[in-house]
Length: 619
Image 1 (cartoon, rainbow, N blue to C red):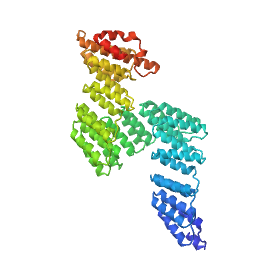
Image 2 (cartoon, rainbow, N blue to C red):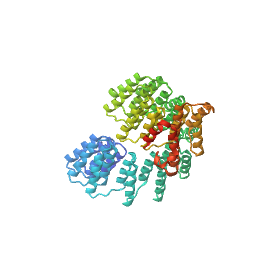
Image 3 (cartoon, rainbow, N blue to C red):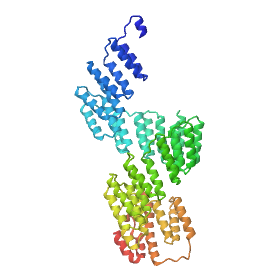
Image 4 (tube, one colour):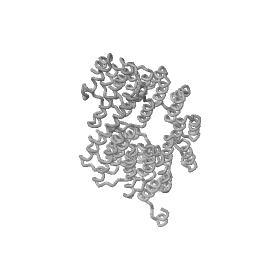
């Protein structure tokens, strides 16, 4: 501008607009305002491009008050705003999380006769989805149709992402199909979003099918695509496939980055392959990739989960030496590790250190410490922390808080205190979840209150929760402890529901054979499962070791135990037949209609006096 002045060339509005825009692009917004004032002093009248540029600059810095002031001045100078002005303000408010102000600007825009375009509506749609304003999402979609605007790729991307992050994959897939049917081309972002959604929920094969479809559309995968697929494989424990995918990344010109290494290291830890996780960590550093806070946090968490808390502390110190600032997740992982080791002194020290460093302990921190205290039977201190959460911390106890306390009191056979916390959940507007019911049912079972446990099962169903395999196995375990006449009646109730037997069911029954002094039956059934090629786990092997140790050919058992033996044989027979059928046909429940009467009539007959009760309960 000085050169222009030297040659008598007066800068006009276009000159100022170019310079103001340059300052805004490079983040020198204060210089842009100085130029704007100079422009006014020299009698050069700004136009809507000038104001739009300044509003955009203010929005980029997050200074919405300044953006609003410039917009107001625009009106005072009788410079008419346009779609760009309103779109810029709406986007600025959205970035700051001020959805109500964005709505006000949108309404003003419509009232002043401006036609909202796809950019306006997609910006608002993205904001509503991000902040879960469901009613406004539906209203805006109706507005779009009313205005005759056709959803574009961006619209579909926003809606697909909304459903994917909410775990609503059926809805996301339906939108994806609609997108293709309407000949709206899905882009790389579309595929990355829906692939990530499937991977997060463990639907890895479906994610790879989408990956192949993406290539059929002529789209090349990005590092984001590969990392999403790695997440799915690692969470499912398919580590060999994850390694092959890393090799494919290299071949296609995507050297694994820090994110890919972090995902794979976390996967090895989840899979119990600690040496491979440590080796890959060293390999990452050997390739010159410095770990960031996410990588360190995942590594420290993996070490703590693998009962290597001392090693985790060493890497925590290394992290600080390198100037990498830990976050809540880092501290929570270490606190959890120390609590599981029983070192609550160190756990409390870390919590204090968090506060000193300006990191506010969150609900996970408090829940972890409550769990650590409950493990040591220090219920008074655990209750004090619960009260602190309730009254002082600005946090609200969640189902994890309550479930931890309820479980601890149940295991301590203090059902009164456990019931007190169940009631507090309702008072504090924290409805019990399926885990709460499972804990409560387990507590009732170990306290030999089977009638109450079965009533709780009815309540669970009434509340709309489908009983899980954990629920059934817990009840089955309780039934096996109960007196035989009541157990046979309660079993009839259990059989009416869709029981999903698994290896845990087998282990429960094998354990009861051993506890009833019948290790030979445990060994016989284990052999039958083995011959049928069922995979048994480490817990099964431990039970069978005990059975071998206790086994005695000449052992005599009482009539009462003989009846219990037949009852256990009946349960094991049902479990075996159901698991065999499940493997062949995919059926996933106990179903007496599929088992021939002669398969279990002998067992009922052998129960003698209880046979009629069992037959009645089965009917």
